[in-house]
View 1: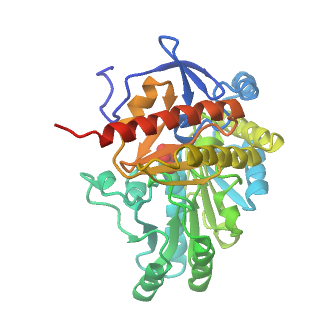
View 2: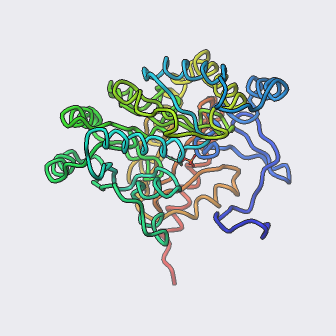
View 3: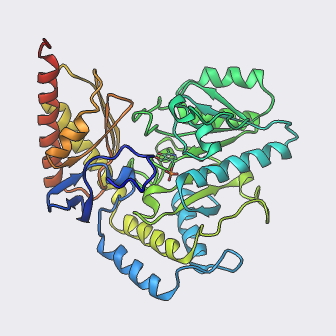
Length: 397
Ligand code: PLP
């Protein structure tokens, strides 16, 4: 690999030249089934024709002006986003971490408006919110913090899926101004909270006049079978963040707000050079249009059910699988043992997967995956997991 690059990533020994749908091809023209879609980004698959058309047309018409002017494509995208989420106003960024930065700044401004000295945001263990200083501080993973101290002030950590811990924090701290939470934890291992967790968070936030901020950067945009995972629980957050699949590969993030959160930011409070430029907005508009017209949310639900049903059947008698968790096409297969080696074993078999938290196989395939592709995916995975069981049971001399 190229040593002109900073060593920020442990890269797998493969690089791709082109793709189509769920498939990618490497430099030797070997084909891979992409069951991770660039970590939940290419939800409409690779080289989507309609998106390619928009990219070409918009690049000829206008790429960038500036947020010092009106941007009609940004206004259109904001309206589409408000329609599908029930939110009321949007700030556009270029990435997930930046969308969360906007949300964090809004929570602080809101806290100061309430007269709080040190506005504090509740965040959870095992969470992931990004790699900027504030979002890495919000992230509940010591490995992400290590070496970057001093961390940012104003965050208080509680266990995930634990309402009592939040009630205790509320009693002991008058400066809490918001809760920032993933409706389903992605990097943390596809952790799906109790059915009433988000409803209870909504109630607590209302009782204390806190903002409920949901990070839907991984779980949003139909990934779990709804535009937002929070829609499964019939709650409306005050602030939602999106990125990843919103642009299907074009960098764009969004911080959406409603109700009392809608007008927190005033001119001069926040901004971005690239955020919401005509190019990224035209592409994201097309993504929403396709997802809507092609009933992608329903497809994600059906495909997620099909994959997990098949895997549960074929792996029923294995001893190595602890649990299969999923909502739509956000799928985690938790093994009893660390299984990071499965990533390269899968690569050899022409399958791209991810392992998070040492022993959780994470699948985030394109939401367009077909029945035939589901069979291919589950067949390879079945073989991999059964082989892994066998080899890890063999005595070592
Ligand atoms: N929040 C969640 C839930 C994520 O999964 C991620 C990325 O994996 C981020 C935030 C950060 O997004 P980005 O890498 O676009 O900054």
